[in-house]
Length: 249
Length: 249
Image: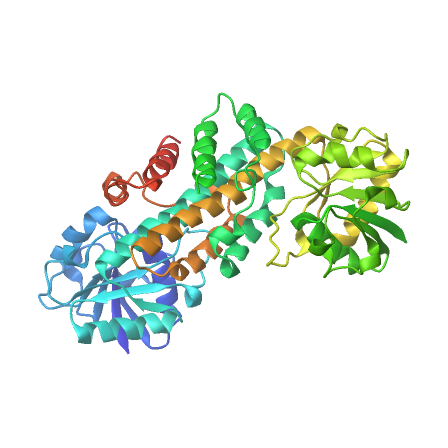
């Protein structure tokens, strides 16, 4: 039985807690949160602490807080030789300074409170300073997922940057598309099958093979007509820049 | 039994032909192609014509050629009162001038030769000048799909523009992400579950609700570090512009 304490109460902590509770060989020891409210509905009251000094020993402490707070929270853990990992895509493992037994458990996924995420297909990117700690981290990750990778801090930064493009930025383009639909009284829902197929296609084709559209076929007439439709909107500059990026390939 | 002739031999024609052949109450009459090679493997030799004057009468002629060629091809159809539709997202119905019995059958999807598409969930956007012709078009579309919409030429242009954002542009961002991965020797495959989840999330949450990432949480430190990593690359300008667009919401 592996005992785990979670430090943090945001979206990543929320989904981690939910999935730890489902595992027979993992025990959720404690959750440290600045306020009890946020995790109240997930765990029993006596497991939640708002004073970090009330932490009991555990096999691993997983820090799931905002990047700026990782250093402070890790320094405040009241044990000298605990195994402490963070869950950030961008921060180096060495931001944890309190202990030599440090590591990273980065889940490459997008989390929202209102949407369950299937942990079993989710890439877990692991790093640990000590081989024995890496083994423990690996043992935990394979409880959740079939996709467990050993990834260095440098590689993780690259993956996180690429993830911003494939997730955050593509999602924002869908926000702009929704704006365009709303402004013109067209239902955004009509685009949902296309959004689904765009992603499905990328499971079997490379993005280069999958590229279609006016820019890919150098259809300047359609591009000009789209730019006219976008005249005076914020979307025009984005349309122009991405179109040029496709045309220039 | 409805008889259909297809004019064109590109990706849209290819997928249309495949799906017409699967329907019991639709008959593929003829395929007009500039060269026989492209559709040879789909239909028997005697169904393919390369001279448009060899077209036999059919209940409907579906033009699936590039936007610039629609007017020319529709004018060359050797019948005066035939029902002729095109499949373009951007062109008005009235680009067809040879007949008053005109319409549009626009399939809101992205087509590649190497990827089968599920027609049953695909939005069919229909338009016809005459109510009786609309009925026929509707009868054909519901053979293929549960999602059939009556959409005007104006609405269709808006939908096509929004589709460029959710499909062509998001796909290109994935191309850029693949470049970033390759340059840094990280496997692009690790991002595929995230790409899938990004689209799945948008089936149940609005893009605004689904938005996460450094820009959404105004994490300027991470944004600066990403911009540094992209220094000197084409991706930097796109990163900056989309990030600003998210920050400004």
